[in-house]
Image (cartoon, rainbow, N blue to C red):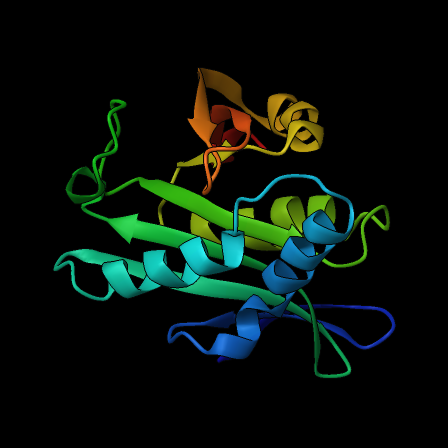
Length: 181
């Protein structure tokens, strides 16, 4: 674990190179919110852990897990994936040495500006300094589409069926040029 940024009120922005279950607590809280609000039956926590486990078995692909922590309590999480993305079935043109994937971006306390600040002021500069120049992100959260559209370009629109085939989930993919942020 390494602290790569700080903000007032004891907020630390950390990066982990090894998975720990507790890092995905914000995803679990989001899944619980969806159950309480009858949103849909797609279990991001299950899929996120399964995704990380699959990455551990692919040579040439790596991940880092970023966390917002306030007084050691995890307030947000995002996974960044790099390496040979073609091994993940990514279908868009990309430079494997310059492109990253942003996966499972969840913040517990929404509306405080943490996500925008974190992505633009901490995560993007961190990877720009490492020589990357674009991030691809896919989302099924309609409220996130405008945010990603403001900082990137929409490259795909599609639908997925929820885990129990009860809901059709509208999804979009975006490409963010991080050297232009």
